[in-house]
Length: 114
Length: 110
Image (cartoon, rainbow over all chains, first blue to last red; front, side, top):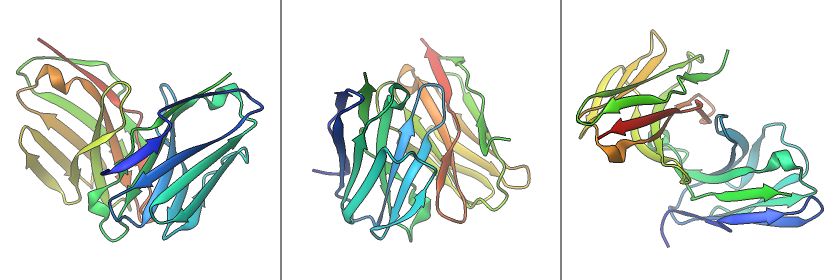
């Protein structure tokens, strides 16, 4: 496996369900991110983990709960979501001391809340 | 004012011509600038990065940065139908957070 992998690729869930998105990076990076991409809106940064510590939470509702057990894995736990939470959720990673390298994105999870 | 602004398009360019994509940003402290390409249904892919004023060339792509005008652009020479995608401008500030524009949808017509 190379790069950043996300599972599942697609997820349909009811508003009362609990599910988790998983992200794994194989690049040796020390920072990981969750972004939300909705139609006709810019990518929205949700959470930042730097050296496994959460350093950013951009006013994201508590129904989204991130977890970073180590520098290679990142989860996004979902519960009691709303239909407007349907979007593409992208995980990314980067090396903090090499900012010019930018972020590397996973393939994303297409989430539909019904 | 949005932090990173792009014309959402669509921008239509004939095959073989030069496609010019533009982006402005509001944070004067921004250090690094990126262009990502995103095909429909796929994730963003980094194609160019730049941090010094002037031009940076990589194959058919040229990134241009003007920090005084807070402006960054991407030129695609000899445009191909496979260049049809949404191009995302991203800006990194002092906190090393990457902020994206809404993207410009580019169509290359054969």
